[in-house]
Length: 123
Ligand SMILES: [Zn+2]
Image (cartoon, rainbow, N blue to C red; front, side):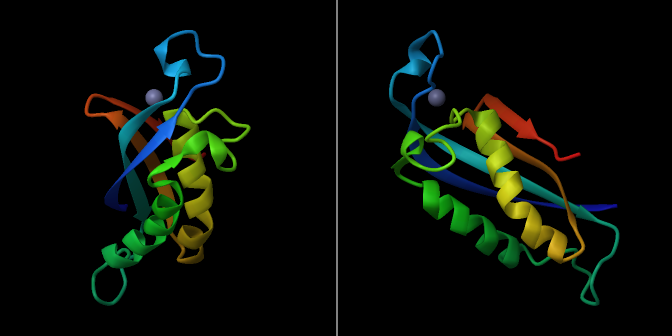
């Protein structure tokens, strides 16, 4: 099994509804998202998937969230914009184009700080 990973950073604001503590207030993070894609077969050039193609796919999502207040954007207008839910959002959105190439998403990790992250792995 081969794995490739691509990381991207973006800045966004959020507030956690119902959280008893300072994260209930509006604040921002310099988020980092990491996507890990896996598969068995390499193409004729020896690549699992072109990094440039992966970056292009993630960038569409990152551009939607970058410098925005996440609570204003679907699905986070209803779903709390926790790192866990953001990781699942990236995974759900990126799964169709990844599957189309016969590959799978191994995991999506969202870092809120250098030392705190949440990972979502599709079953
Ligand atoms: Zn936060």
